Length: 261
Image (cartoon, rainbow, N blue to C red):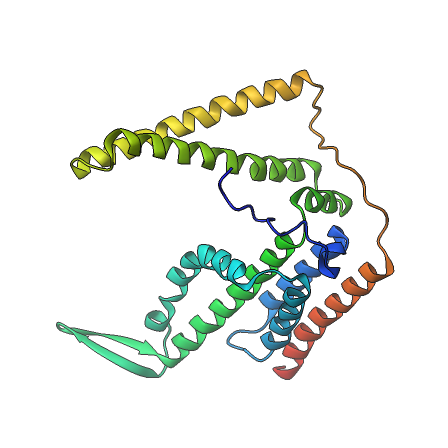
């Protein structure tokens, strides 16, 4: 495949990579939960969360450029949502734009609200990215199974991750084949119809491949359970990592609410 996988750097050997997948999952979930529970428009409680993620990032030796590129991929949707708050949130007006007989206003409260939501989104995405960058996906699925996540959900996640990239690869090959035939020339209407046809064919090809794969797996005795080598029990370092991270997350939430009680 020609696509960079989410766990591209997961095979490295650093203290972050050697932590137990279940321990990392619990710790990252605690960080995400603490970030979400921080009160509205409060930036100071997010500082220790960002510091903890930065420390984990440094220990994992994940390239900063890789992290920024991955964050840039998922950020447009969040930006499209938060960009509306400065115009919709009531409060003290800081900018006015006369437009015809009306005016567009930007409020200070809206800017603060947008910045706060964007900061939360970046921290949560950063945490998830670091989890995937330091844990092989099959190990992560095994960790979820050890945490008693429903088996059906774990299996579906594993299949989704595995074959999403296959579908993307097929789509890329079909796009290259189409470009080789028309060279990107011709009226835009014909090019649009061609792209629409590619989407339809890709859906049918992916459906057919899924059917063939499922039949082949059934013929080999697949019973709905994904088997993977089991890791040993959690070590002292794993328990220490989980305890410190959960304690930090709890301190952030409790301190935030006590400060604004």
